[in-house]
Length: 424
Ligand code: GLY
Image 1 (tube, rainbow, N blue to C red):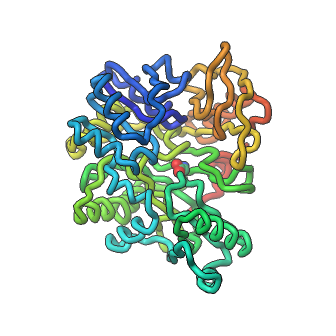
Image 2 (cartoon, rainbow, N blue to C red):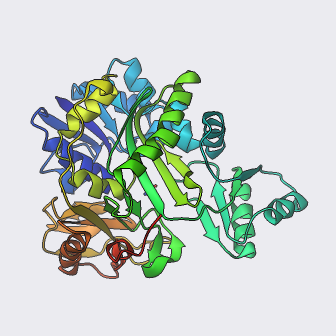
Image 3 (cartoon, rainbow, N blue to C red):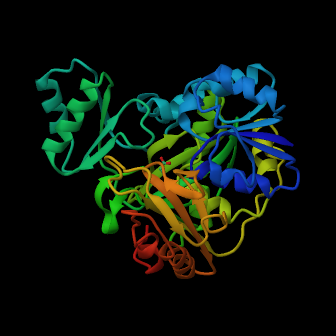
């Protein structure tokens, strides 16, 4: 199989690594990819406009791709999958209308309501809302305010705060930028990321994971795209995963079919499991980052065959997915200034930088014989082990051997779970 992967971050590095391990894969191309992926795939830095459908079709034709795997949400929401399918190419990733499950939080709420799926109470404010409307809406939320940009923000347009003034400031900033705002009630309970392969009404869950969204240890600091993740969740049973599939993912997949916008690709349910059971915080139309880096490292089944079955409408015939025993974690090494204004260009040194079993590259460039930081989340350090503690020890041992000026990690990824401090 010849495969084109779209994207350039740590998630795509994990996808490329997984696809490369599948014996049915003959060639992998990445648009634009990164230098770190070059040992596993042909990278195409000249194809960096990943949200331009015509450019992606051009490259898919040029490399005679039999399957295109789209990593990030931006090309999906821009209709890249639609254009490739119209050209007769199999695609892993939903069409533009189905990608609205992430692209518009209001659309996601509508689908969940129709599917009877538990989620937060919400209220939308549109640009032009009066001061009185905004204050009245804020009166109905709190003490913990959840304020979301109802545009596409890759998980970064969300502010969760107990300070009303900070909530108001984010409302004003989003409305000022011309986007609607969603105010939501805060869902309590531990968070879960469950990724499912979805082909119409067929839903196949991957291992559940937990991300760590705040920048610093003990869940302090600003919200980020995700600072680290572990999988599976020792505090969640197999039956609990099936309950999420039955109560959340399958009803949503069925509702998308009923609306005439069947979903094909990866449906990412971000959940909180509180006293009422699992409730949806958000859906994404793609693999989550950095959970994917940990989840895929435990997958024993051939990845390309699973993604291809999803893309070609044969997921129901796929053999059950096989997983390694034990645990995996990803620790993000971020640049100084992340998330507000990460500094780029710092030289990265250390061991394991060219070993994708230990380090995946999320935001690096390679020049003059060295890797340099080139983004906010720079590296994803991986660790596996029979226990979560062992996986943590392995990842942090690798992290200790790598440095760049100002680069930082959270020291507590998976720590509370390993100490048995999380339960539902
Ligand atoms: N794990 C957060 C995200 O992918 O949006």
